[in-house]
Length: 383
Image (cartoon, rainbow, N blue to C red; front, top):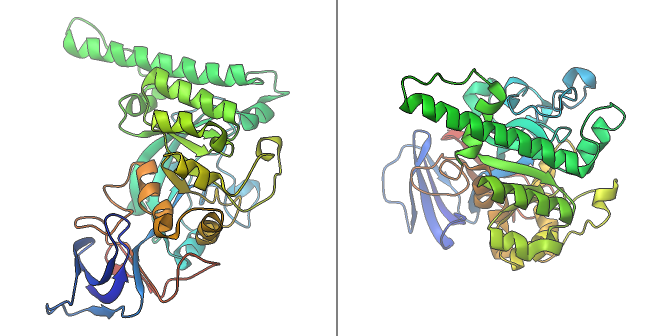
């Protein structure tokens, strides 16, 4: 398959005013300027159109809280234990959730979906394509990150249950204690491998789940809205040498310099909505722009079903209106989102060897509920 004649915004490197994208199997074979002169049997004419990578929602819960259902489809928060790193979102995601179809219709080809923020240590996050019916076949990476949560949500969940945490001190303590246990577990495993006379530690599924986090093999995603919670996340990231990402970062602009110094990205959003709880009282739509101006790597999320997943492009339009330069805008829902999820080797840009997730637009995609004219996912023409 070859897509020809369009303006290409690859989201890495310069824009190609007129060129082509060549696809072989499930991956991109070539992205080049000029006229295509080959003899590929399937050619899509994109003259007068914009060609972009597939969009990525960098943080949501689609398939975990199913639309149109109550408790029966609510599988995002295990509110019986504040420390659940061993829980896998892969075991809860329902790809038949209507939200996947909505995402697909509006060019969102990958979602980063996982547990909610009830627990300080919430569980494993999955990055997956939005086309398909069998979750295992849709996976880009599972797990791609571990979910941690700070602030108001864990406090509210466990207040009145006569157990920790009911303070920010206890939330941080639970996270720190479990990470310390995982460090000790890792050291004991290493000793047993180096010394045949030393027995390995008894299996601990919580510690096992955290080993990839400690080794920086997957990201540590910290739900944090308030500036003080963001700084607590930075402290924990620093203490344990984690590959950390701040999710939401509503007051991130107040500590933008600290985030920039730490080189910790922020997945901002949702930008659509009202200040429905105390942590959101300082929500402003220019937060992504102010963070980016300070040198922080920024991407966007819908937090769906908090807002509909198809509002990702509309959220981007609002971020542009609030100060994100248009020439940088698509990166917030493509390559920056992929980097925040640790999947930039697969998706997020139009480059040789990456998944052939390609969108063709006959109008500016940065706008209100704009649908792509054509969509290719993993080399397959969807529409």
